[in-house]
Image (cartoon, rainbow, N blue to C red; front, side, top):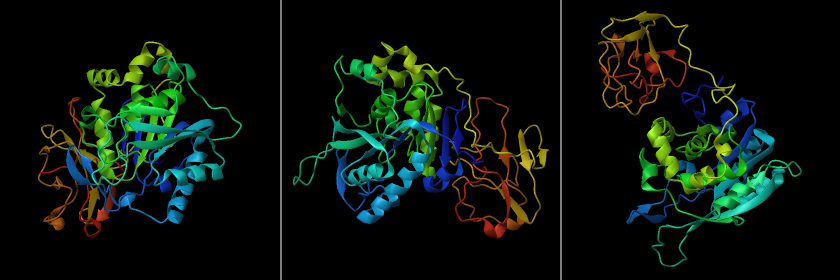
Length: 397
């Protein structure tokens, strides 16, 4: 079983924090569609403009430039793994720029995919080119391919035609980049707009479809999928971005926010006035992914503390420390529930006398409106010397 980072209450949004290359081989499940926004390998010290300010375009170590041979090997590996997780009639969408998209296309062909279209996303609000030595970069490319040469794929032609003013939609899409309302939980450095993902999902899936994103980022794919009645599994290596994904999904648990987001996406509004069934899932959305397990604590010895503290202590031997991997964000103040609980408010265990600690506390609330931290892995007993300098464990004093 793979332990999820986060699951939505009705299981239509599932997020794993880890390496795609390690996780994809661990389960056997076929998806209807895959969207991937892999590294473009363009973080090499360049500059751009955001909100009128000159900024460095370096996104992180995951986006650093590599040799062409390394780029090809990277793309061949993840596309091969994804092909194994795609239904025979399923399709995959991959976004990119000239830095990586030609490699992706070659790898798709090599692996037996059939390329259906290469979409040109023409951004209506691109950043200016501050060097004044090139044309302004205003487009990205999105390859659409199906798994097998001779197995038909799904395409909602009539809906795309309706969205496009009752004329055939071309492979040039004029859509804006992300809007301020899409950044309420902060943004990922390469975050795609919900309008773009909504069109992709509406075009190539039916309601209730399972969608995989192997480089989830802040999970725009998952948010769009849920707005449209589809189900989602995302894999994201960076916990910082996984936390943003979780916050974004919790945000649309509010019915008003959910409805507001749908109204802000023109393709959804147009779809609702002609094909309401494209949002209706015939299957019970509560269906779980069979390879995602729940965190199990029932085998640990639970001892209830005083009713006033409203908590349970998970006790172990004095020479060991029980630690958890938990979501580290969102609760600015931590509840006081006992002097022996370790404070890791900032994710650090410095300046703590380990010899005085017998356990770390994990809270449970009776208040349904409270948002407790979520366990990310099965609790384990470790020696005090094994505690890393930076660890996300339980709550503060």
